[in-house]
Amino acid sequence: MSEQIERIKCLIIGSGPAGYTAAIYASRADLKPVLYTGLEPGGQLTTTTEVDNFPGYPEGVDGPTMMVQLQQQAERFGTEVRIGMVTSVEFSEEEGGIHKVIVDNTKEIEAETVIISTGATAKYLGIPSEQRLRGGGVSACAVCDGFFYKGQEVAIVGGGDTAAEEATYLANICSKVTMLVRRDEMRASKAMQHRVNSMKNIDLRYNTEVEEVVGDMVVEGLKMKNNVTGEIEEIPITGLFIAIGHKPNTEIFKGQLDMDGTGYIITQGKTTKTNKPGVFASGDVQDKEYRQAVTAAGTGCMAALDAERYLQGIEAKVTT
Image (cartoon, rainbow, N blue to C red; front, top):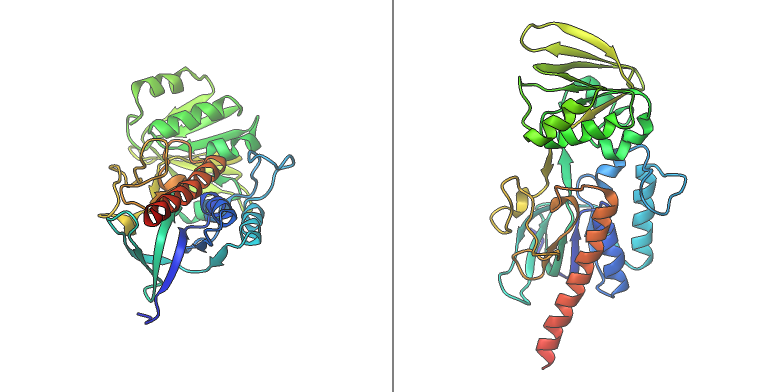
């Protein structure tokens, strides 16, 4: 452990749209934010080839370029962006207390406020062909990328509410949607199941799993396996959407912050405040409903404003 302890007014953990937007607002408020990028600088958007639905980009933009531009904007206002991984935290229980953070298991930092923007990680099947074609037709967000497959044949994997919702979304813009459900029934609510069954261009396949995604540079087809009969069938598709859930990146905060049953940080009302004073959460780490870049950016703005007001309140109490 390093001997010198650094004191920071506003520490931001995570470098996706939420983290960088928080940094822009915090630096403009003279909070002198320091942002640690984590293991995946730029977050999930760095694996997205085209971002077509973020305001201000009429011609669209690729994900990595957008994240570089967000970083440059944050740095222009004075944010210090550091490469590093926060490995442990010790949050104060007291209003005005100092939060202790360890980076890369070696550097100790004391922070007056902490904004958590560590995001969530989409769950994938883990087969080699799927991983190879991520960004080449394999996606974990139909709402983000479905538009690029308008009028084409696609497939979606999953049996829960999210999969059902995304399947019906795709069915409205694609010519055919093949839906693969691993079990002999869907986990989705009855209402969502009825919605799927009402779409004539959704081909619902139970007891079916992905055997292989076909294609060299882009998705060209899909080999499916019936896990009861063992039969393998190949169909032509141009896009494969994985909808088997997300995992919030909250492991190091467990036991200190209030979370729901799946690990998403619980924030108070319409704010980004957590149960610890001076600790705020923004983006996908506390949003399991929308998970869009623009909504993450919005909560990043909110977190910076909440942090600024928190510090102003502490300062007012000290001076009175």
